[in-house]
Image 1 (cartoon, rainbow, N blue to C red):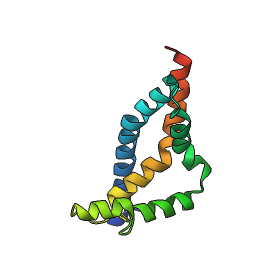
Image 2 (image 1 turned 135 degrees about the vertical axis):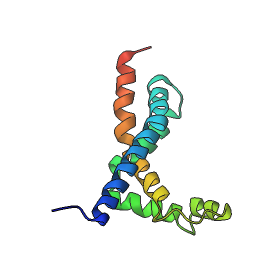
Image 3 (image 1 turned 90 degrees about the horizontal axis):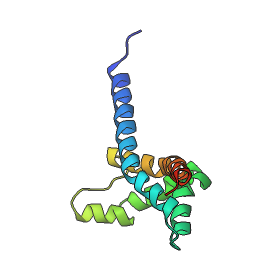
Length: 120
């Protein structure tokens, strides 16, 4: 049974989203993990908690807050509208932001443990 064009489009979208999300997570998550493993700053606790938040909140709650933030009345939604970019909800950029936010603890925490195990 051959794949339809809709199937191929869905597979391509998934591959594109996964690849871009992985690259962004490595670029953003590695410095955060390194900083969290080496710093003694008072910000370590709050930043670590923000990074771990997607592990505590249900995915529907995270999605709801992302919709509020990225929507036309949200902080980022109003900012992108003022730049003439429209809102990010239900766009590929919104998908990438949601994937990065949801996956951040799965990158930062293992890297942080690895950096801590290496030592200075």
